[in-house]
Length: 419
Image (cartoon, rainbow, N blue to C red; front, side, top):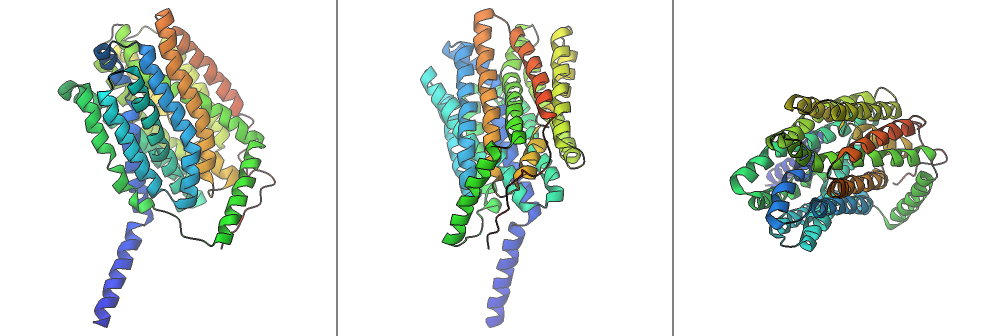
């Protein structure tokens, strides 16, 4: 009996070790990134059918997605603080429930107010707690410094794969079930995040004295971050990434239909962007571990300026749509591995979820403006041309901002040891 108990205990311990092993953490984390990034990346597919069915303007729909991006950004630092202190599993599970509720209510929303509450507030807050930002922070604690950039690339690539999968899946669901049932179906799928979050569960418990040391360390880290020039510049630059990603995700599909391109090409373009960003994110993750992360980011933003300029200047056709989507896909979220890598390089992994959440908040302010301005300027001018060229100007700005960033630890910040 004693031996049987020992064997059972040993088997249970081994099972626990395997369940919390690095490969399982990486696979489940990538699964969460794939699922959470999927629906929010295809909101543009619902713009036309929802506005036509409800008689809303594009600005109304755009404002809801802008609120979503803003609330995602506002909630991210707080979700990061909770994850840093209590672990990621509970945060991810709660975020998944709120995310799913937002999709369910969005499917029913009879008025713009309910659309703002569901697609805006609920999905935005759900994303702040169940998105790849929290997953990347968990990866940062689980892998060695040498492999951290590659792990960030894997997590980002998984999110992009979600965009590819849901790009086709979402349009298929809309065509077969209608836009309302498509939202409900995706809401059900989001609940799987709570299960995938289990291997990423909380950090080990520490004494109250150690907790006090950690809180003091967080305060010192935040003070150092806001006083560190490279961190401030990084935060400013990530604003531009949010502007591009949000504007293109929501307004590219209706822009193509306005220009006489079949609506199916909008879904195809979003899916192609997601597919090519799988390669782009992996490449970025590998390069971020070998060359200057700041220089890599500058190249990415200058590349976006070239891609958008060519797309606007060349005659529009399915071929140019595919070429633009492919090039933008490579540059899409390839900003995330070097950006998150710079945060970890400056301040270490201990408070990465909090600090990356602050940088990400800037990203979401850009996303808010990209989505809202897209709808606002379209309704007032009847065209997206002004917003496209604004995106080019912001690309150049971001490229220049990243050039002076230093890929080194922040000065004057002593590491804190917690036994």
